Length: 280
Image 1 (cartoon, rainbow, N blue to C red):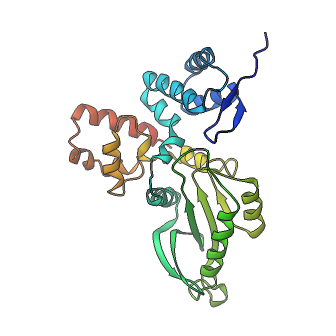
Image 2: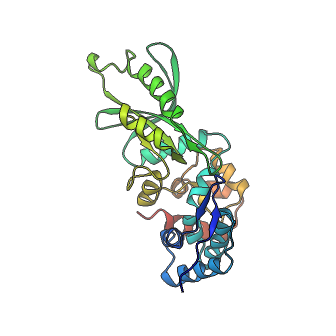
Image 3: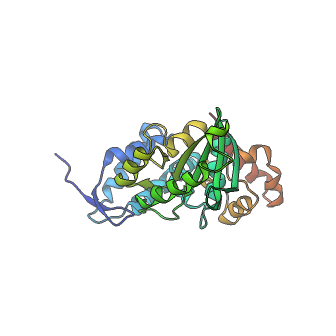
């Protein structure tokens, strides 16, 4: 018997047809085996009703993954974990800087550069292969919000002022530059079209395909500290305040767990989860 379409409510408030395939794909990305994936999908289908929110579906799947294995839940909550880097955008900027550092870039975060006309505070400067990438980050603390064309328009004008400064003018023999816009959500079609037209490199949760923010994190094992299901919100904030934005950073700075007064047994579980997530 053919399954009827069920319309769900996305975080943006828009209606969409529920997709079993999308749910299965996100569950497989967590590392869950087919038996667990099928079990969760069947459970969600039993509780599905018109108008259910994606948040309710997520919460149900997350709870079942966490019960099965915490590392599955940690990987599954990646998108939500990046939202938890807020409420300000600065931890997200440090996260992007760390992501690029572990990808072989030399990075500076929050550098002030005198442009041709005015000075600018640049979120991330990342240098690799003779090119200085001038990166602006657009952080959203909740789902459903997209970067519209105004964002790359504004950032492109700032980038032009910076690249035309004495420091970066290519005719002075300086390094080449590239402008980036990075967001933890998505770009509208107009934003993507404009970015391509003017030569900005756009990086979002799902773009470019195969090398998106999500792809890079999963491929390199560079998960934010906020993915942990074993650390409390207070403990995560303690670490973020000390510039620990990647779970991987705790591998060499595990003494922070001692500062938090975490018991040996719990510390062992945290380290085990961390080592599993950070495998490349």
